[in-house]
Image (tube, rainbow, N blue to C red; front, top):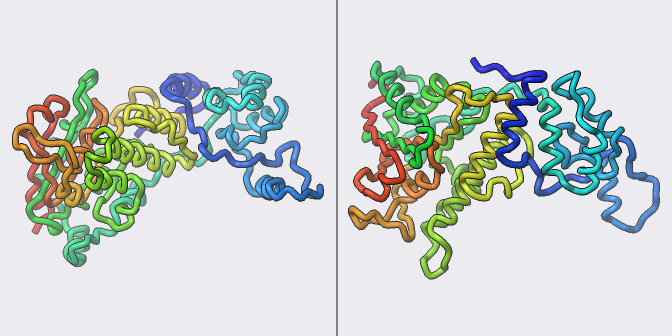
Length: 386
């Protein structure tokens, strides 16, 4: 099991991670709080904004790890009082005057980077509960085809003996190839539909073979046929790619980029509880760099930790496999790319995406697609013992 870095070791690892991208800036900074110099609530004023500011100072505390919550009038002594109980090393202290100068100048990106080098993340950053995380993201094994009883039964049925063999194949196919310019796409399909227990397959694989990665925020799991998931901003962006026409202009996959970036941003915000600045998720490569650095800081993930590569898992993605992209066409067949194929291709190399569904297919004959992606398609058959 991976252990969190503590004390002085954290400063070095966080400093390395912090160079990837600026950290955790809040696009909607909260008003100052009453740490040392509070807004006087007794002062009469006709300015309603001042009244709102005063109320907010009571409700929102300053957080040592998030300088966007610090009052702009904080002095070096105020900052010292806030940070002193959260330093990662008793022998190493930041230059509080420099921190105050950055705060007053509004350079929260640099300030946040420095603060994270010298301080510990929130005390609650021991990792997510994987079982709860998977149940939340994958639902209660209920799908949209009125197969509730079959799906519920699948969750309690034992797996086939060959499931471990399938897991081994997945493990070999998913790790990124260092230095490769190709992303990895693994597609698992099952002709048996809901009774094959594909949702339970995902739960078992993640909890048994990617447990630590999921625990420390490096695995994104979505069940695409849940009504609540279809209303998520990331999926709305993906569906927009089908609805737009070439006459509307814009580069192909623009909304796909937005969909992927929003999926990553919202996941990082969910597992860390730290507001995420959309500007740090402006394109797929930047989004992944932020994902890696944010989780490294928050959970204390050491560099080059084993089996901690970012992974996106899309379950029950039949609808994405059925809808067509507005402009991308397979050279080999002349058929449009599906939204599922287009989404997989915006995952930056050399990272991996795992998609699974009863009718989730990825083309393996298009030379253009194969030039930028390692594609593997598996037919699961019945992964649940009948």
